[in-house]
Length: 300
Image (cartoon, rainbow, N blue to C red; front, side, top):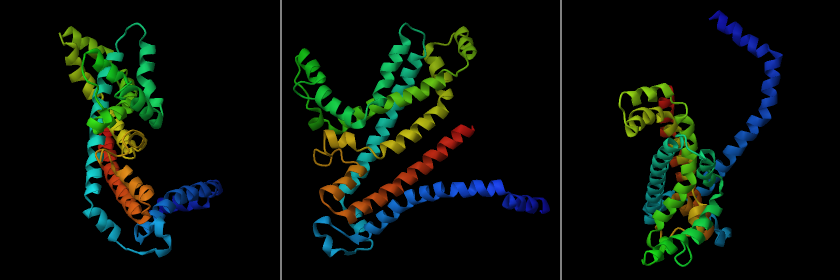
C-alpha cells in the first residue's frame, strides 16, 4: 500500500513525466475534438427536422427521424444489402486469398512478378476500379465479358442491370482479395518447413497439408483480415455510386449509400444524420465482436 502511494507520488512529482504529459496534451485534445465534434453534430442534427430545401423551418423532431427510418422499407433493404455484400466479399476474399497464397508459396519461375500482379488491384483507387470494371469488363457492348460471350455465340450480359449485386461483389472482391492474399501469404511463409516435409514423408497429399497444417496456422491471420476488411467494407460507397447508383431500384443500396441518398439527394439532413447515427452504432457493434474474436485468436 505504502509502496504504491510512494510510486504514485513519485510519478506526480517527476518533472520529465509532467513535461511529457503536457506536450502530449495538445495532440490528445486535437484527436478528441476530431472524433467527438462530428459525432455530436450528427447526433444534434438527427434530432432535427432539417431539410436544406426549407432550412428556415427547422424544428426539433426528437426521435421521429429514427422512428421514420425503422418504418422505412428501404432502410431495412440497405441493412440487408450491407450484410450480404460484406459477408460475401469477406468469404470470397479469404477463400481465394488462402488458395492463392498457398499456390504462390510454391517455388516456380517468375513467382515474384506473378505476386506483383496479384497484389496490384489493392493499390487501385475504388473510383478507378469501379470505372475500369464498368467500362472495360462488364460493358454489354465493348466489355471483355461481352467479347467472351460473343466468341462462344452467346448473348452479352448487361451485368449491372441483370446481376447488380453480384457485379458489385465481384468488383469489391477484386479490390480486397489481394489484401487477404498478402497477409495470408506472409503467414504461410512462416509455417515450419520441417512439419510440411514430415507430412509428405508420412504420405500426406497436398490438400491434406493445406487443410490440416496450413489452415490452422492461418487462423490468426484470417481473423485480422476479416476485422480490417469488415471495417472498410462497411463504408463502401464509390463502387456503388459509380456503377449502379444504388439500383436498379434499391438492389445495391447499402447503409452508407442510403445515408448519402437521404442527405445529398433528398437534402434531408435530419434523416440522413439519424441514419448516420445508426450506422455508427452498427459499426461499433460489429467492431466489438470482431476485435474480441481476433483478440482471442491472437492470444491462443
